[in-house]
Length: 242
Image 1: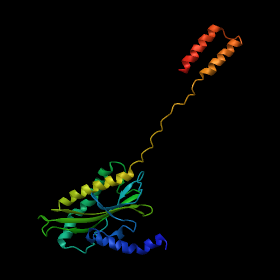
Image 2 (image 1 turned 135 degrees about the horizontal axis):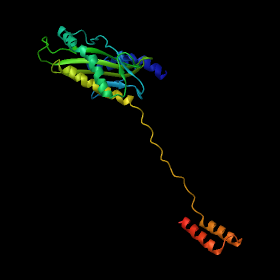
Image 3 (image 1 turned 30 degrees about the vertical axis):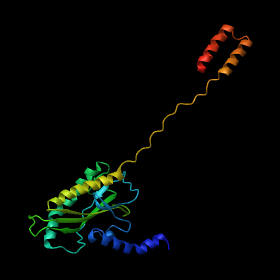
Image 4 (image 1 turned 180 degrees about the horizontal axis):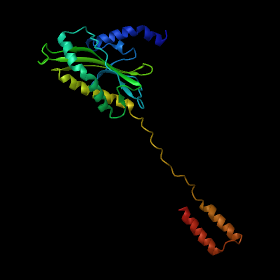
């Protein structure tokens, strides 16, 4: 059986196993595609980038987020209220954070671009029925990067942010977006130019002193040079040979 056919046959099982083991079921690899194999990341939760990804001379388009997926089932009213309080800030916070991280290496636009960034919330947990009271809160989300022309998956990211209160989540998400921008900047930077080759001075052949002296003596024998002139030329030849 060809390797590609085998991968297609076993892809559903691989995705199902990975989904169950990553972030307690909040990460659904099928939303990203079979090509994404997630690895833990210190700053981005779980991530995958296409090997050799080159974003140089491309433009990033930020699409509006998809509706919340609620992968673990519809949460209680307090959780949906929590999400409604923070979700309006997700798109602008993502845009500003990515721009900070990119530092101008990749243009970012909400309407134009040949590389598209798509996001969605997959779970949210509010800390209390009273939004103003303290308590642990959670926000889980997916981000994927796709080619705008072919739909090919270029990058996949998932994370769950946790905090002591609802106000902590937007701050964390801003830092997360900054880290994502830094990650993409590495793929968007201009290729390093090859170092210039040193210009080598032409190699000069060593001066043939013996040959010069023979020529001087030959000119003397032919009566073309006097002894005085020969001495001057022998001296110059000796100096040139040094």
